Image (cartoon, rainbow, N blue to C red; front, side, top):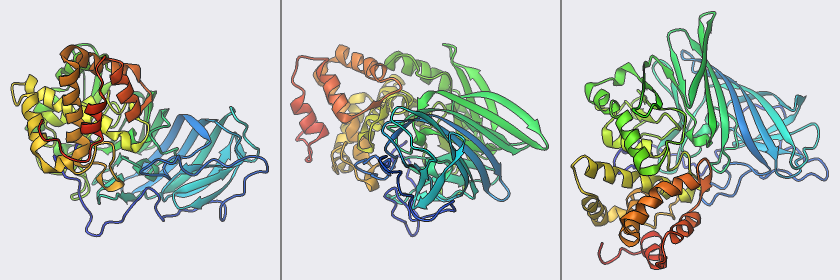
Amino acid sequence: MLSRAVRVRWRAAVPLLLACCLSCTGGGSGEGVPTPLRGAPAGAPGVGDPLFPQAGNGGYDVTHYGLGLSYDPASGRLTGTATVTATATTDLGRFDLDLAGLTVGRVTVDGRPATTARSGTELVVRPAARLTRGARFVTTVAYAGVPELLTDPDGSHEGWFRTDDGAVALGEPVGAMTWFPANNHPSDKAAYDITVSVPDGLNAVSNGELAGRTGSAGRTVFHWRTTEPMATYLATVAIGHFRITRSRTPAGLPLYVAVDPHSDDPRSAAALRHIPEILDWESGLFGRYPFASGGAIVAHLPSGQGGYALETQTRPVFPGDSGPPAVDTTTLVHELSHQWFGDSATPRSWPDIWLNEGFATYTEWLWQEHEGGSSVARSAADAFADPATWAFPPADPTPATLFDPPVYQRGALVLYELRRTLGATAFATLLRTWPAAHRYGNVSTADFTAFCGRLTTKDLTPLFATWLYGRTKPARL
């Protein structure tokens, strides 16, 4: 995501503080929280994330989401069936899925009806029979309703954005639960098959590759498949009258770009033509592109509800509601670099997000220098001089400051200091080997500092103590 310091996220007139668990409820098939089967511990209703402790759920690991969606733009109603394939990591008499709003109908586990209840944003499921540790199980949830937007602690919106002719789903950090039930935490990544039925004439764009397109009775069904693991916050669906462009990078990577006609201006079009060049340039720095396709979505969101770009996997979303140009080259560089840093190597917990944004911001600096603009040293000096950079250490945000300048600018300064300490050769090795070593996995700040330590005989403790963990601004850059 692009920093609010660059592209301000809209603040609601009366912000609703969301610390992940909203008070919203939806229809279910039971009252209260089911009692676990005797001898089988319940899956925890959260993974204990330091910033969003109720995000995600304990007791199982999802391997695949099969989402069958049908959307009516006129009413805003979404009808869905989610088939969630998972493995139990402990014996389970009950487990939770994250779901905000919407009305839940029939729920089955391994084909047998399950008892359910709603508790805030928790869909509590009790299967007909205990699930044993190591067992693979399939949960199917039928649901429907008009998805809602969530208001984050910083006042910005996320979730399911209704547009003039369709919708766009943006889910960082927890908005995915507004449109499908999930283990909604970046530590549990999975493959996806997403089918979307829309009225004829509309396109439905999602992550990964278009596996099929069929039509019947005035509707078109688009089937998108993502085989590489993806965090829930990186999943997206965009529905509307998009203009579609298909191409390839010089290296042969397939690209799929969807642009809302309302946001189709010459400057954005010129920027989007740089995608092949940018991806090949970033591949030269960071190693092989980690996914089977790339591209972008430029969406025209309702006035006052968008305003930020998001690195949705393989196909970043850019806002087309804030006036032309909807896309600029620097923003493209930032969001496309996230395909390595954040999408492939994904944070283990939300305080680790600086590993996404610090690398993406540093990549902006590299691109500007590459294009003959500001040098990396000049960009670092500007960030160092900005008082907002020093509000808190990069790895210590709050839910309300998750997208504030220290996560981005000071995160990039950590990398700038590493380059000066490690030297150009070792730092270039870091840029390639860090994402390669953690391809499709999860990473933490501790993982990163340990990894850097193995690239040098120098003691990096003072560097990290000052630039990553320190609470005061250093005397000089």
